[in-house]
Length: 419
Image 1 (spheres, rainbow, N blue to C red):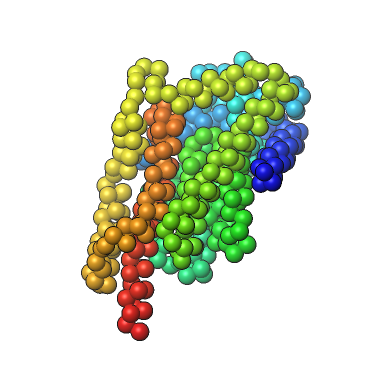
Image 2: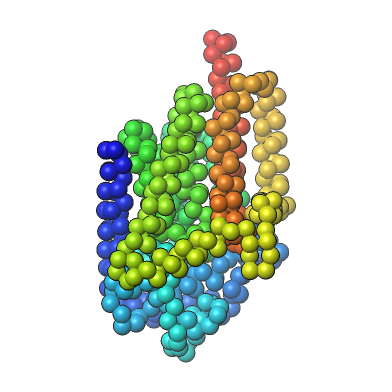
């Protein structure tokens, strides 16, 4: 009961703080933001709505559709109160394609139909609006390459410092396979990339302090994911820290690890869903039930096994996401890792047994998280596979880390026997 009340208090405080931050963001001069965006007009004129970095490589597809929405939201001027703007998050609907709409807004100063987007928190505006006061969208892409690369490099450094060198390769392969070069050019894709990597980094930096507070750590990660994300590949903020948790607690027995996974996943879910529910409650209290009705309708659509044109199956959802990794480069990376594993097995003369399978179970359980997510958000995962495929970073990192764990454990036990 005490924990339950504490969680409710955390959600309440998070809602108030999140709302206040949005009010501050909307108090900033949007006219100056629009002027800075005009410097990036060429990008949206030259690039397609779903531009590809590399022709015929589906996993290099940008989402200028959603980036344009985010920029329209950030640059909206309007004469509504900042409370109204913070809850309903307006943009001008000048065209059915947001990229074209943004071009018309920036080039011809067209401000036509108002379009609210109230079902998300849009917490990214807390960072995006101040950024756009001083920088352009072009600057964002350039700075993002530097910041994202430094973050990955720092995580690798910390993994070395924590003597987790063996897990650096699985981490790097996982990052490479979700195509960071495309992520760094996209607002929409970057949010979760930073959230899961910063979450992993915090575990590496403060694991000793967080060990007894994992449930609150995952609760906060879930809250922040709900607040900042635009429903891209949010489960990554659960799966990636979970993997690191069981790596950092490798001395625990397999059953204890599974209990840890289930408990932490539950609290992440409470934070994620709870923060979203708090937005519905706040919006309903201030502006009536329309936000709730709209949100419930979208939830119904996104969790259905139907699209506008056809019925879909679980098999098709899995296939559309998995096949994004069906490129020569991805296959070469997997082949090289397999060769590395075979070399280790031969070198250490490893023989597989039932105990190894039990040791693998926690990793295998985490591997299933993306597939559970795809089933839960079936319609969304089917239609938006161009970015939901990145949820499989969890399966990749967990699978590769599990193999490394088995090899390392076997090697250590052999060395101990020799002594």
